[in-house]
Image (cartoon, rainbow, N blue to C red):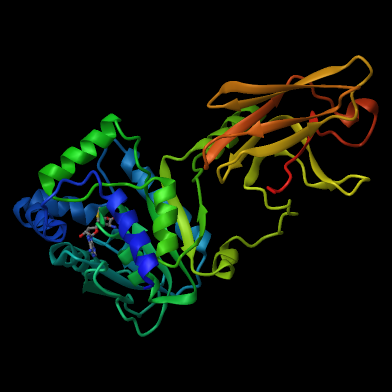
Length: 412
Ligand SMILES: C[S@@+](CC[C@H](N)C(=O)[O-])C[C@H]1O[C@@H](n2cnc3c(N)ncnc32)[C@H](O)[C@@H]1O
C-alpha cells in the first residue's frame, strides 16, 4: 500500500475506534465472550442459537427484521443456484442454512469454533436438501477474516455480512480480505443497523456493552461505511431501504411510504462492488434518462427530464419534491413556471428537517428563481409549492399534477 494511502487508512481507523475502551484484546474478547455465551450459557443459550432467527414471541420484531432484510438482499442479488456465497461471521449459521437450502454453495466462516459447531449441528440435523438425493453444499471454516483472505478455489459471487461488520476493529481489513475472494462480478452485501447519534441512549448502551463484554458494538454512519468500503477497494455502493408488508391501495398511504423510504437512514443495507459493472447487474432495468451529474438526486415528485427550446434540461415537478443531497454543496437549484397567468403568484419553499429554510416567489413577470442548498452531504431535503395545476383541467390528455419546473445545473 502507498505510504499516503496507509496513513489515510490508519487515520480512518483511529477516528472510527475513538469510543472503544482502551487496553482490550478485542479478538480474544470475540472468541472468549462467545465461548462463555455458548458453553457456559447452557442448553438455553444453545437452543437460542439453534432456533435463530425464529423466536417464540411475544416480540416478533427481530424475526421480521432479520428475515425480511436477509431475503430482500438475496432476492435483489438474484444469483443462479449453485453460486458460491461466503457468509462472513456466520455464527450459528441460520443464513448458511437458508442459502444452502436455496441451492447455493456456501462457505460459512467465523472466528468462533463454538458457534460453528452449532452451525454444523443445524446443517446435520436438516434432512431436506434442495436437490433430490444430493447433499447440501456447504463448508464451515474457523477463520479470522481481519487477518487474511480465505483463498477459495472458486471465487464467490456474493459475500454476506449479516449483523457482522460492526463487530470488527478493522472493517477495512475484513472487507479487503473478503473482496480478495470475489469473482469479477462479485458483490459484498452488508445488513445491519446504522450508528445511533452520539449522545443518544443507544450510543451510550453500546459503549457500556463494549466495556462490559469485550465485544465491539460500534455501528457505522453512512459516511464511515462508504469510506471503509472505498478503502477496501469496493467504491461502488448502493444503499437500500427495505419495504415489506401490505399497504392499502390508497395514494396517501403510498405517499407516506415514499417519504419514509426517502428519509430513512437508520439501517445500513447495501451492496458494494469493485467495478460499476458488477453493481449494474443488480441495478439493471430500463436505464433512467440521466440529468447531468450534480451531487443531487431526485427521490420523489418529479417527471422525466425534458429539453426546452433553448437546449436546457428541466423536469416538471409536482407540488412536493424530495431530493437527496449526496455531496456537500452549496447547490443551486433553478425553479420556474412559464405558465403563470398575469396576476398569478407562486411560492416555492425549501424544507430541511421539516422546517422552511428558504422561499422564492415566481410570477408572470419573474417566472424563474434560484434556491441555494447549503446542507451537509447525505441530507434529504424537500421543496414544496403552494400552487399546482393539471393539463387535463384544460382538456389536454395529461393528468399529471404539475407545479413548477426544476433544474439543477452541474457544479462549476
Ligand atoms: C452478531 S454475530 C452475527 C452472526 C450471524 N451472522 C447471525 O446473523 O446470526 C457476529 C459474528 O461475527 C463473528 N466474528 C467476529 N469477529 C470475527 C473475525 N475477526 N473473523 C470472523 N468472524 C468474526 C463472531 O464470532 C460472530 O459470530
